[in-house]
Length: 92
Image (tube, rainbow, N blue to C red; front, side):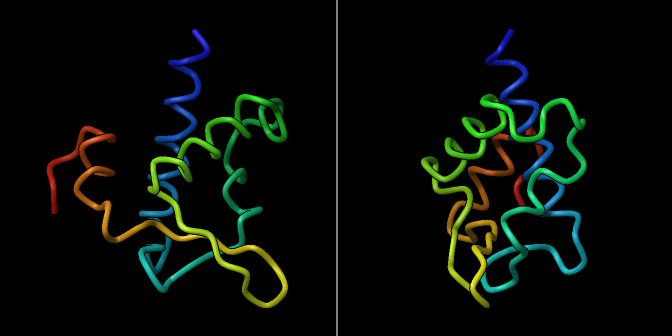
């Protein structure tokens, strides 16, 4: 059960970053705290969400950089094919 929920959370985060205007690939980034916006309030700050995000960093799907004193995050352009595969989307 936890595995399915974690994967759904990861997919939601990745899709959110891809849907932003402009999409958050490479040099386009957003504050890390924005990752959990859009998730159900009962999940925000939960262990499963923290674990899901940590795993996205470990897979190198997300890149993290300190900008304007805050941590910012973007999708790793080098992992675009793997991210699309993870989401079950055709590669672009």
